[in-house]
Length: 403
Image (cartoon, rainbow, N blue to C red):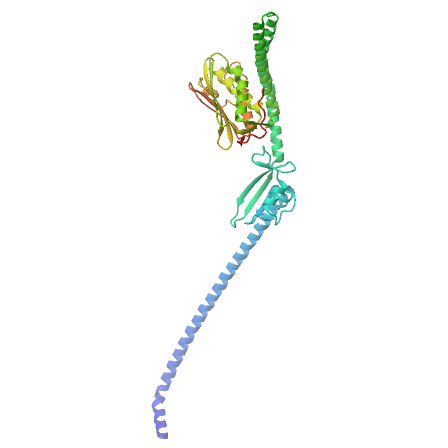
């Protein structure tokens, strides 16, 4: 066995240096690769750390900006003069700024918006786009939907704006009084002179009942004409109309026909009446509305300067509106005043005041509606009052027809 071990040692001895060298070379190569891998890994770790630091810094900056923005919005909400209320999907108040707490009575947070409405608001007929409160103020309310099925509500106090607008309108009307009085003085002077002339004739018709009654009727007609002019002027000065007349369309139609009887019962004038929805009830100022229609009829008759065919239509319209139209086959409106025919003191008649259609437009606005006029040269004119005053078919407490 000793001989065999010697033989093996003798046989392996020459190859040990080469194997050892190969092993060292392999070890060195693997060490170099491991070092390179470690360096690459370290470089990647450093790169990731830098990226993470950059992302963290960016995220921190974004959070800081968002926090700053949130603080600015919170400050803005707190100093806004308008009320801001945030509702959740169930209609409960989750946020309310100080202005909203000052504008509305009672607690707001965690309360139902419906309860807040019942507690604070008392709508009136003339609210328009605003809503009245129990203490007489007027708020405009705007709502917007949120992404989470909630809502944001903006309340704006329009009370002072309404009051200032009313004062401005009144001042504008008063500033027009000088021109209006000058125009009315000329307009009233003619019927006044005629009335005085007829009065002087009364002394000469003693014993002649027919002539006396004729003079009396002419005097009455002239005085009524002057009264209408004065009423128009007063309406412009006051600028307000109480909507206290609750009547059916049939009752209004009858009162209108009675008021227009004298104007229509003249030679060369033919009039066709159309009435629809007789049982519909309207809430109006009947005297002002009749006066406006009478202005339209008088304008049509005066513009024709001769025989004229009129059509007067009283009918329900869309959106609970009442439509009152006066249609004539006259010469139509002159192009020069077609766009300004409703302006104060604009007229195409030598003896006109330019007050009639301006009054019609004001009456329509006072009823919450509008005045629309369409005309074609040589083919006539259609003038319409569209006012949202219909109350339905109920006839409860209608105003009795005037005698």
